[in-house]
Length: 357
Image (cartoon, rainbow, N blue to C red; front, side, top):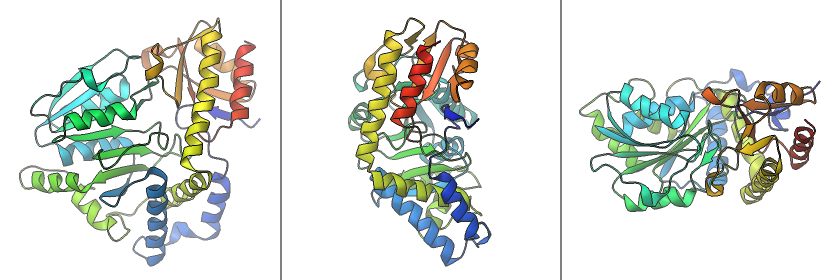
């Protein structure tokens, strides 16, 4: 049986993935030198497609690393001499905070229970914090921080860097990179690709800070920002890159651009509205995030009266895979990914089967 994955990552592969993979193999791109013009052209194509898709200006570099978790470390090394500040309301925003402590930074946090969100008006950033770490979409809890609130937070704190984790929502958030200093995502969620590639969008101001810090402290020996940036100017990476991942990402981004990111955002909202409407009316399920303004459009989290394992087993028998709750909520919650790889029709089919339980 061919399964449809509504899991929050790794997730359903995008429908064109297989053809792009076949082209990659047929053209023997896995064997080309990463210092060749052929690779540079491939690299540049992917960067150009992402610039179009996410509206990234030339003031920001688009860099390729192994994962979003690696990017947490790069951001902290590059933008924090002493102190960081973290908005924590779930497991992944907490891990970003934990990374800062592990790197011997002084990490401040404003923490809320899982399921609750943040407004810019309630956030007081510590005076000496250099970096504000925000999460557009908390994968563990299904809480979304509105882009407008993230941008207000930056406007209130113009002298501090703002980082945006959009791992489980890109390309949905329409970030204004004239305001946002750095953002990042990985490809195994909304881009419908296998795991193994992180994408870091980072401003020239962050580069300048990294060069300043490097004169006083270590900013790491592998994939430090100045070296990444220098290589990116030549459409290269410091070490041998994930050529297949970069190639496939460029092709999927091109597919997204043909559809149009505005159209994709509307489709995401349409599918999310159907899922939330069903969950709200169901006697077996209820939305975990109570305030509608904070509900994720890309990872829908529902409390379930039926044991989550039973729901997942029964839905899998119908050819669909949904995610369990994260951590302590594994047995009492469901997480349903709403990414571009699953169509409106597939979402409607999932809703029908959930309604039959």
